[in-house]
Length: 92
Image 1: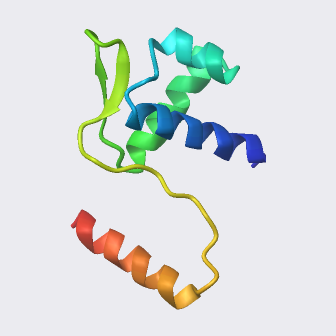
Image 2: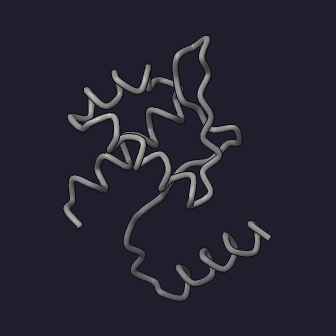
């Protein structure tokens, strides 16, 4: 998967967190992707548990709950396992 994919995911996540996405067509243009590809990103994010909503008045996506994506390498595998276990247990 190209690095650009993760960069776009991070950008989408950031813009959703600050409620600054604009309309889908505007966001897709900003990311230099098609609207269809944008919807695929949003679906994937929702499938991973992101509570993404759209505010028609503010014309922006937002998270219905506080949170965001964090994709990174963790050097200490024990710490990473603890973090993943905590995330898994919180979802139950």
